Structures are given as C-alpha cells and as structure tokens.
Length: 432
Ligand SMILES: NC(=O)c1ccc[n+]([C@@H]2O[C@H](COP(=O)([O-])OP(=O)(O)OC[C@H]3O[C@@H](n4cnc5c(N)ncnc54)[C@H](O)[C@@H]3O)[C@@H](O)[C@H]2O)c1
Image 1 (spheres, rainbow, N blue to C red):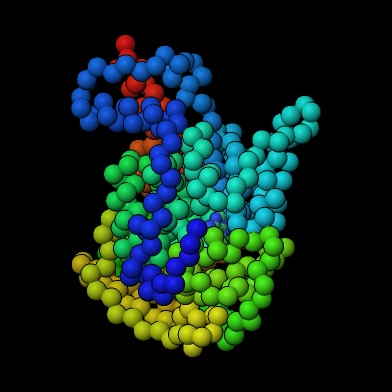
Image 2: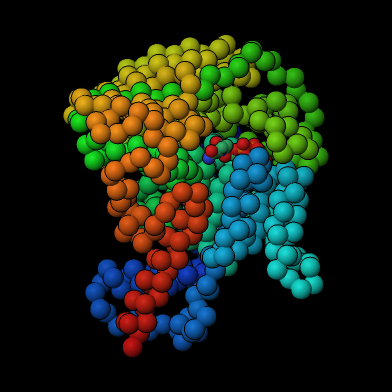
C-alpha cells in the first residue's frame, strides 16, 4: 500500500481512497440481501437454495474478525467477545506482529477451554485488513485501530458485506461520519460505535430522568473531559521495528519517519499510545472523551438525530512541531434550536444537566448520581431511591433487548442475530 503526504486529510477525506475489497458474499449476507430485495419488491417469487434454509443455516454464531489488537482490544474488547455464546472470533489482524500473536494466543487459549483436547488452533491472523475482509465466512468486524483508520476500514468492511462495530471516536470529521452513515444505510449494514457510556446504567438513568421531565425543562448542559499532561516532545526518528508494518500503520495519514512515541510502546500492551496526542491520527481529548459525554448530553436532550445550531469555541494548541500537538485546553459553547445550551470544556470528566426544577450531575467513575430533583434524595445510588420506572429506550425495546448494562458487545451481536432471524423467517415464508 502506498502512503500519502496529505496534511489536509481532514478536509480532503481519505474515505474514497480505500475502496475496500470486492464484496464477498457470505450465507448471512446472501440471505440478508435476498430478503431485503424481496422486502423492496413485495412478494415477488424468490427461490433460495435448499442448503441455505436447513436447520443449521444460517450459522447460529456470528463470526467476528477483529482489526487492531492493541490496548483496548486485548484488555477490553476481546475478553468481552470471547465470553459471548452467540459469537466466534475467527480472525485477528494487526500490523504489529507481536501484538497480533498476543491476540491470537488469547483467543485460542479461551476456546481451548471448551475442547476435550485442551487445544484450539482456529484463529487466523492477518497483517493486511483487506485479506481479512476478503474472507466470506466472516459476518462482522470489530475495528479497534487508531482513529485515522476507523472510517476507511469500516467502509471497506461494509463494502465487503460485513456488519461493523467500530471504536469511538467513530470518525475524524463530520464529512467522514456522513459518508459512513450514508454508506451503512445504502448497503443496509448493521453498524455500531463503541460509545459504551450508553450501556452504563448511571448515564441511562440520568437520560431517563431528564426525558421524563424530572428536572422540569432542560436548560443547560455541562460536559467535561479530563485534563491531560502534554509536555512538548520532539520526535527522535528511529529504525522501524521488524515486527511493525509502519507503512500500513500510517495508511491515509502523512508519512513522517518512525519514532516509538508517535505509534505505540513496543512489546507492551498496556502503555498509552503516543498517536493519541498527535493530530495526524486523532484530535485528542476533545473527541476521545467528547464521543462519550456529549453523546449522553444529546441522549438526555433527545437530539440524537439532530445537533446544535450554533457553536462558539476557543482553545490552545501546542507548537505544531511537537509530537504532542492536540488541544492543550478548550471551551466550547453550543446552542440547540430549542434554546438549550451546552458548555463543553477540558476540566474533569462529568456531565451536569440543569432544568428549571432541578439538576443532575454525574462525575465519571463514581457509582453515584448527584441530583436535586423534587421528591428525590440528593444522592441516588444506582437502582434504588428512584420512584420512576427505568426509561425504555426505544431502540433497545424495538430489538427486544432488556438490561443494557455491561453488554455492549453482546448487544451488537444480538442486533445482528435478531436481524438474521427475522430475515431467515421472511426467507422461509417467501420460499414456500
Ligand atoms: N471505548 C473506550 O472507552 C476506549 C478506550 C480506549 C481506547 N479506545 C479506542 O480504541 C481504539 C484503539 O485504541 P488503543 O488504545 O487500543 O490503541 P493502540 O495503539 O494500543 O491499538 C491500536 C492497534 O491498531 C493497530 N493498527 C494500526 N493500524 C492498523 C492497520 N492498518 N491494520 C491493522 N491494525 C492496525 C496497531 O498496531 C495497534 O496494535 C482507538 O480508536 C481509541 O480511541 C476506546
């Protein structure tokens, strides 16, 4: 793969330059498209091959390929997927061979526990994500790479016929996000981003109270990110380590000489990667935590499908030649069409929702929700002291998903499963 020196890639999005692989049609994909075609054209006669409709088809398990096997994958995402009965991790992909082997070992050690032989060797490894996407037996991919790769990979995966779950922040720009959303809609792929705060009861609870009018009319929202230590750091170029395909790590980003602090710590799966503070790959905390807390703000405000109509922001950048060149601090003011104001700043991780009859505040990491709400205690511990029912989230309810807490990966798979079941039933009905 060739890399490009395109320092303006936020505006000149790379999304169309990584077109992906030619669509590989899996059984599930075939059924889905067949059923959707029928749905679009009414009850037109549809003849499906018999073996697609057998008792064990489509497969009971969603087969998953994981792209990017770094810190978040090995500590959080992979352990989550491995404990789910309805999925099978069949492939992992990374441009760092040491990390790739670690992930493969984790997968195989887990599945080996199910085997009487005590061994399992069924997890394929790929350096190039396009080869993983070309495998027709993979239903869904989980993208957990640095942010600059999210949208190009998610697009390629959708075009290859896969459902996609992708880490937050989902995109680097509004344009990239728009292209991704439009493509998901056009190709009818199940898509999800890893803003797991929605799956935490505390935040769900806060949104519930606000939407139920428990603080009166919502007036002001405050969200904050943690402050970051960002001492200037000059790059010290070094030879590319033998285990790393640096060219493929860079992908659509500019191509400076390698240095470890730009990428991730070598032979270490716990250290915070340097790319998280460099604008060639992400925007730093403003997007990193903003993806979480502003998502909750919009959820509580019930503006998921719209957004603010005005924004005014100021911030301070370090010198651009420092490796750490994302925002040092910032404060942004947003106004929504209904007059609600949101202030988002680098401060501490929290969200505060103020209405004309009360307020709710959630410091991140605390199991408590602070509140001043009529008829409620000032401190609400999860699951008690609350007289109002848990707000049914329409999307979850629609899919028959009950308790969201701690099940974010399972939820994605469940959505895929339910869609497949519905399609399977539809296909059978149409085939008789
Ligand atoms: N949901 C959360 O709470 C949460 C928390 C931490 C990180 N994250 C997100 O997870 C993602 C990964 O973060 P991390 O801390 O694990 O970073 P990391 O640098 O440790 O891991 C990323 C991995 O992707 C690999 N990679 C890079 N380019 C690749 C390519 N072309 N093909 C295959 N693999 C490639 C890297 O080699 C690395 O192993 C980021 O988007 C980050 O924002 C989310």
